[in-house]
Image (cartoon, rainbow over all chains, first blue to last red; front, side):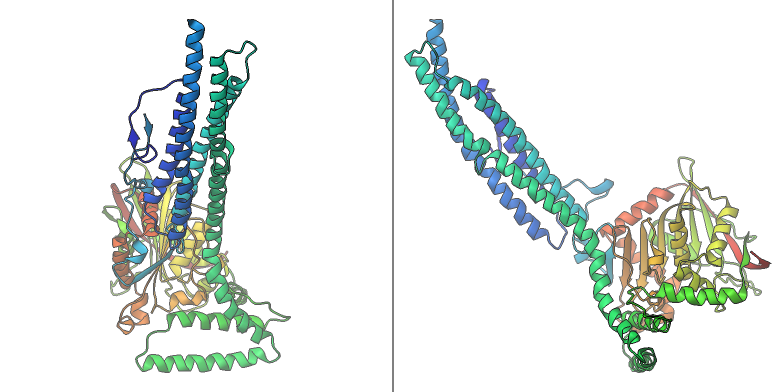
Length: 91
Length: 486
């Protein structure tokens, strides 16, 4: 299950990776808000139309998950490279 | 930890009430509910929730965008080449540059956080606009489809000799309807409303000068007749006196049926000791917290005269009420409320049968008392003169011809709920029986069983005013016109 659809335990990260986790949190919140609206009881005659609109928007937000994961990889490499530089400096 | 809690998340119940099932599609009886909080076409709550969800999602993505922007700034700094470049620092700068390229589409790309947040905001705005449109259109559709018919009738009235033609045409139609009913056909409640509208437009067409189409001709025509009659009979004083021996104590009225039962067996006493049911019943409710609230039961038309009888609930009052003028029956009820000691700030629930419903609406609209809810039974309350800013529940039988005298269906807005009962066997409920308070008491029982949002919202307004416990003391007031001029 992707982090966007379920609870995922993980270590608390600092630096840019921590920032990216905060981005994940906000994207999750957006998904939660839209899923909550879909799960609620709809009475209106036009309910299907509004559900469709929300589902479309939900799909767009879900697609951000892949982009966040790709960015995570790149940021992780950048952080690792920076730490390598730092350790060289300390040594 | 990041992520969301999966699972079905129901909307919170509205204002402490259990969320009802799709009540409009599943009413257990033969009643049809329109208007009110639940709406007819779209429940406004659905649209509010949709707009709120979209707005909330947009805010979350905008917050993500700010963080991504901050990250980009840091990655920009790290991408810059240092003066004393080492192979490691050059590699770190290259990695930072790659990370920047990976983060950028997430921030500002076509499918990035800012673009999707913009789409969400835009959709939320459209839903909000749709909500406003629904509020307007719910009343619009009914009004203007019917307006076409009225326009045609008025057009005929404008034509040379049109008014003269219209009278016989309506006469022929009414004769045909009478024959249909005599042969066992259903009571033509809906069509009766159209005939009243046509007649009223025919009367308007006789006025000097061209008369433009009106979808609501009854107030003007009623006003013309009322002014004419009043000029003859003159203004009279009215009085309300408590009737000895009518004081009763008990629990406060519960539910719609509890309010309607207030019409049962009350009124001033006739010569033979019989109950005439012609008084105004004022009930004082001392709520559990010691505060006072009131309910007033207002009777229907009692006399057929036009301002010449002692009892003010006559046809002159009917005309004046429909015209939006001050009627003797309204003054009489206000006098009874004053005599009972109803405070201007104390919540009042008004229940009116037939003409009493018109009086209740006029008092609610006047703002003279803190009216919290109005219930009308078989009242012609569709005209523009019968609007108030108070939650109103109208009960009507389709075979009751009295509510058709306004020539309009009741307005369809969040404060106005109409419950119409179409009996499966229309002939079983004749127009006379259909108009009786006993029949409306039965309908009120069905309404109390309903889980419809609009009905529940009205019940909530009533319960909020009268409370659900406490003690009620009711008293009947006899109302009459005096011989003295006002």
